Image (cartoon, rainbow over all chains, first blue to last red; front, side, top):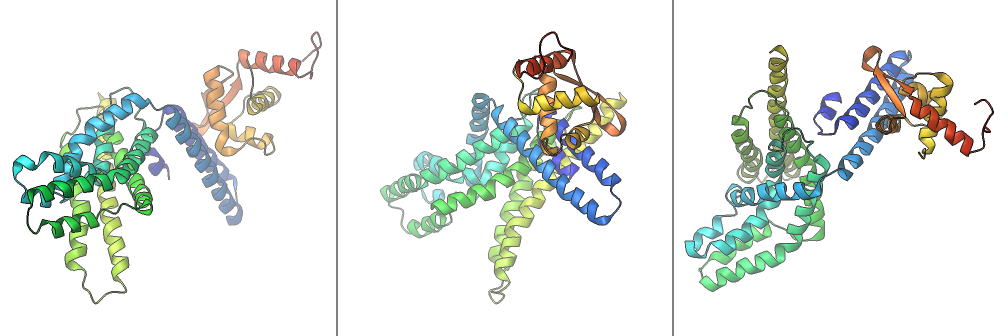
Length: 292
Length: 89
């Protein structure tokens, strides 16, 4: 549990409160002799840590510098969203248009693909946050939720506009391809809520990776900035391809379970690998700094 | 300086029992202070200068009232009518 909590970027005061609560838990558990009382201590310990964590997150959220957080978030989000059009495969309908007609639909598709690349956005925002200042973890995750809600609300307008551009250019046969892309981007309230519940925890793991990378004191291993998007694409796109190509139709009972596993396990594994790489480098750099 | 209920209780316990760990304060409060919230409150009180802490065994911290904390508690007790001016606290 300590390793998990260490990954959450919090201010030193909240970190100390969590550490002291964990130490109390350990001290109390050591005093208990019977298994039952030790189990009860465990329950109380989990409740105490949850409470102090909730208080720390509220405190962290209230202390967010909203202006600089929003500016940094959108400065990173815009270019990453444009890259996201290519990373998520939404570029296919663009290829049927003349390049001169790309700007408007490209901007619209970038907006639409933003939720898919938000983990990378928070990773880069956290990793490049100015030294000596606390990364506003809760504030960034609230920005993620806001972005998902805004994009979800804007999608009908955006796609209406994209369809209009295609109709103007009269590209034959594009409607069906575009329709399949649009079908993969549901716009209902439930879908937006589902995206929020799915995206925010996933972004939290990537945020922890970025914050761990930023904590490095010795020269940063810059390759991690490049490895991150590669890992992201591999862990999110490959499961989709596997789902389409490898799932045999006859395993219809197991198929939903396999699909859920494919869509959830590899992305989180990729994110946790990145956190591990960033933290491993941080530990070693701390040792080097301490030794010097 | 206005003291919150939990701050008043913590200062009272520290004045009565002397320097204590957070867990000892929770146990001495008989359920009025919660395990998860005690260190958030103590951290806030440290920021206000009401308590100070020093590292003790096993990485835990021992909390004690500062002179400001003792004066704030005295003022709060006088204000609440628990003690009268001129009487011993």
